[in-house]
Image (cartoon, rainbow over all chains, first blue to last red; front, side, top):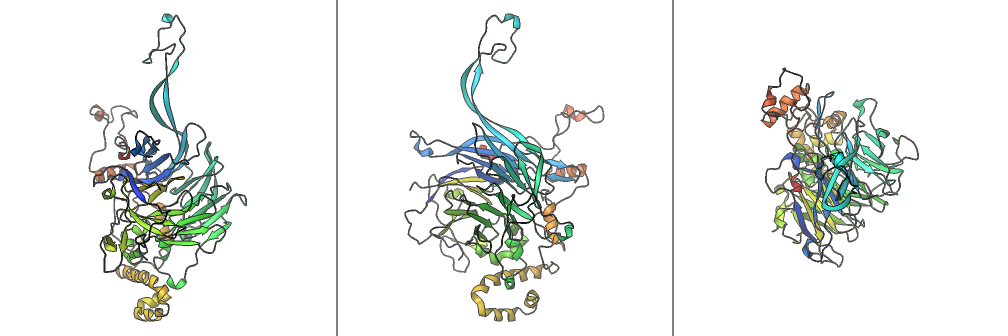
Length: 453
Length: 137
């Protein structure tokens, strides 16, 4: 069951063969905390790929146009823009530091020449505009080329400025700052399909914002109990439905997911649907609740399904059926017998994300030892791949990896005890249209593409 | 109640579970791990999902560079948060941790102490110069 991979199965016509494409980031062993990537997100077209890190910086990569004269740079991603999104702040009232770590980035659909994205840290959400400038006006009437004002008495003729091309300059500017709406730490933001509103979720509350209005937001979910002693669960993730602008879901630390409909009431404390897989009470252990905590929830592109990630598995749910998931995929079941040490080193609290492929036919999520897992929902096959510098020859195929639990370790397999738990892949992203994936391995960003079928 | 039974008679439990080994095989490792944990930390509460546990999670925020030895306190959802008495305390702790001086704005600016009213330019930055991400390098 552990690491059941594609090894041994003949490759079908539709099988994807993932190849290394690029890796970004420093090679040195000593990783500065600020360089740890904390979020990865493709934009709607997939041409732009944004990353956020613990140092509050955003780096955006742009896909190169396929070029006949340079066939080897097939769709490579190169740096497009980089800026400091958030800075560390100090809350003087509570004597607590507010980290600048970017928790999430979400792109807005493109509506004009500029690109917009929302980036958030624990407390503040910012709307950034990224625009290109490739022309410069020359020949101003009232000032010299270096900007100095011309002496008005020397001006005898009218000169109309003309636009001249210049080297492309990409500018990022903060257009909106949505602050002071969250007492607890923001874990999710999600842009609505109406392209006008978005939600932000912290541990206990979810707020609805309008992109144009920064001085107020509506609270739509409030899980804070009157008496904090009665607190039993927190919100772990939230997302808007991709097509229905009135529907959103939020997941909890108890392993449940609630779907809410904003048409039913202004405050969506009562859910419209409640997704929970019934647990066998006799199998309950100290760890049950911790490992059932959902770290990520994502709607499928179709809007028919949603996926939840808990510590050991990924579950696909049909929105029409609340009683149990339609698919359950084991990510690293071999860790079940290591829960004690994973609790001691805090790894049991790691928050893994998950993502759908553009067509919803496959799902991907990360694991330890820089492994990540892919599940093909049609063929029911899964594979374990590794993001490492050793497999980083251009267009080198990735070899499936396998973890063995027993004493007999085959060649090429890695034993559970040899896994490096400090190398965790928490953030992955899948291109919305094609077969390109971005995998964040601590401070490095790996980009893999499939071999042209 | 079943958990208590397990602690007292682990052998018996295993016998009973042989009826349904298929299912229980997946659960036994978890129970074994639980027993391991309880053996190490006997004072650990039965339910980890209690409000204390979650409260710690809500308060997490500060970079957990100070780690406390695992005491009788329930485990938090991450590094133990460090509350500071005030901003001066915070700055001192940071300076000590990073083992370097707070960045100063320049040699002549060091003389700005009580002689005149400082301007924003005179004050040391909270953070040293911001470096471009290595991803963009």
